[in-house]
Image (cartoon, rainbow, N blue to C red; front, side, top):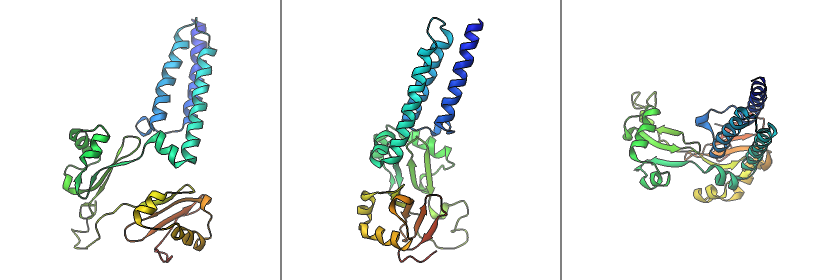
Length: 235
């Protein structure tokens, strides 16, 4: 009995360390590869904990191997946008200004009931109130309401406002997203001009995004963000 208690304490301590290394995200916020590793870790720990005939090392080694794999996958997903998409997938827009994107729902293996449930969970009950709904890579749904249906509505105050639009990311952690540049019809020289004006190197840029109005959100690593328009004037 004391042997089983001793083994359980050791495995509990190792599991605690492993989970701490993996980060503080909740189950619902885990990326697919993180969820898979978490489930495997749970199974690996129960075998040597309950079976005294199984050497303890047979449980410890796989646990340490998995946490090393998790660390490696995390590094790869941070360094490479391509691998990040391959490992985690990418957000999918399921509702846009034209309505529900049925092809996107089929791609995600979702039906309308799933969509309605996600919208209700986000606090929205009418499709016509929604500008965009996005299924994130961790399965959560993000909802951007139409301008007139924001929590404090401009419509109630008789203030006109441009239709809600999404920010388009052009630089992600030092990497230029060329497909978004092409989507907006911009050249890399546009980014080079901004970097020169901000006296920044590409590798030091955490994020650079732009919206329909031409307002740019720019932030370097370990620095405060700034916003400005295409002409470089602060807003």
